[in-house]
Image 1 (tube, one colour):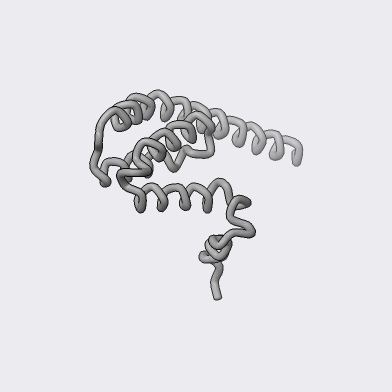
Image 2 (cartoon, helix red, strand yellow; image 1 turned 135 degrees about the vertical axis):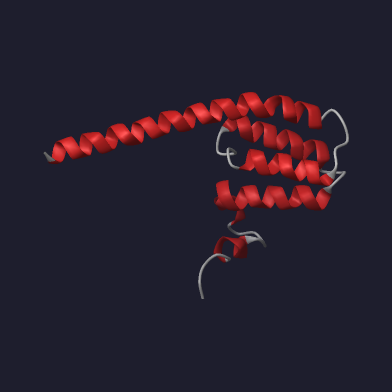
Length: 114
């Protein structure tokens, strides 16, 4: 009986992973034209921020990360503070190792309770 429970759990997790993969596929399809549009013109800082917010949730996926970087590169000189914020948020969430040994290492501990 324990094997049945473990097998059911494995099947449930596998099904969730497949749904998440499909959601990522949908995000790539939906966000690619948005990113191409926003990078083809000068958008407002709010629009850039919203776009990066939407992409952030899926930035663990290489295809979405590529779109995230595309927006950052397009707007680095126009909205440097906004882009710096989103780069740091990405690093804190998805690339924590890159902060070790830098002046930003303290950010790795900012959520810890005192």
